[in-house]
Amino acid sequence: MTRKKRRRLKVGDVYAIPLPNKKYAFGRMHMDGSIAIYKQVSESIEDLPQTEDYQFIVGVYEYVLKSGEWPVVDYRPFDNDEDAWPPPACIVDIISGEYSIYYKGEIRDSTKAECEGLETAAAWADNHIIDRIMGDDKWHRPS
Image (cartoon, rainbow, N blue to C red; front, side, top):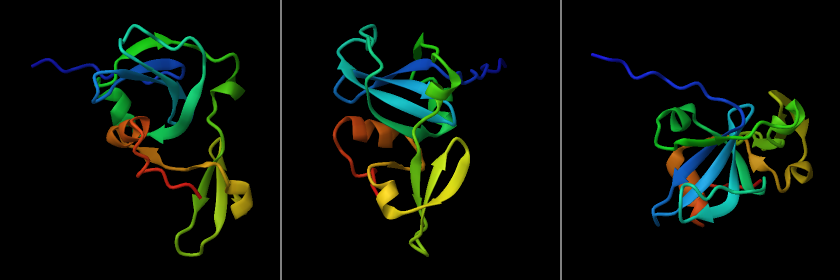
């Protein structure tokens, strides 16, 4: 029995995301287990976005990228390490109601005002990301 070789995740890889409407979205791997979803949605897997114009950046479960369901279609290295980091994300403690900001692997205290407009720090499953691309924002819980 042959064992399928697991692919290493690589910051800068661009994944094609098959959508239920037979189109493709694309996502670029960032550091810290995050993926930036491009604004462009295409009819063809070959019609890659030409600019780094994203609709959102979220954490993604590792299995999503390693499953092979989203093939790697390009590699776009970042100009520098700073650009490879996702933006800050908000954490809300559901018990205390206190706010924190997660950025570059660090958590610091914050305020509700400072968290406004930030993504919630979380890892997303493939179906949740696809729902959001398709316009169903039920998984997105802004602060």
